[in-house]
Image 1 (cartoon, rainbow, N blue to C red):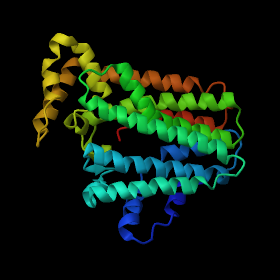
Image 2: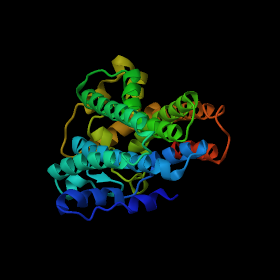
Image 3: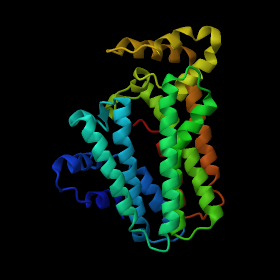
Image 4: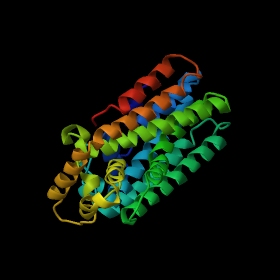
Length: 315
């Protein structure tokens, strides 16, 4: 089953145009469709039916995109997937309201899950949604927090990024009848892949190619986001030598060109990129280890391939 084709079947030709057109615009931008893919693959691993997991897979993708609309407003991001963000193309009020409607649409889609599976799926989905909001709040708090430990950052990205991947896998496995132990293994696989994915995203924000990355490089630096790259640099510098980096990360400027170039230069002088890439590889390998005791079939091979692809990507 082609998930892009199924997403394209969702009908957004509704009134009022100002509410639904931004939803259509957002979902038409594509993206990797990782979350619905994971739900489908996990279901296939245990012999489940695509049509049973499809409502949850679509709900996960719509929910994910809802969070992006609101994140882009909070981060003041201008570009997403190579196109103007909704709040730029329309306005902030539109991005907030259309995002709210996407959340509602996600739950409407979720209601199509087989009735005997729906209560547990709702429980998992709601837990995930709450944790993502918690992660986003930590992310906002960190922008104004003087000191952030790497362990705190990892907790934040686990909530903000990893739990969505992990829950997609668990929901797919649960719908197909996997045991609790098997669901937990896939959930932890998703957590590790998600941690690697976000750290790779942090790397790409500094060293990515804007043509393939899909959004402006240096955006996290401009917003003073304390990414894994930044925190690793601060750790290596120590208290005495971190003044220049700390200075630039406290600047709020109209034009961030010099700020981004200077901070990037500090990162490169420290060799932080290689350190971060090693951490991505460690989390990826931890994820792959979790697949060894699960059924070995085409779905398992897809997960291995997807884990490798996500964390060596340039976009």
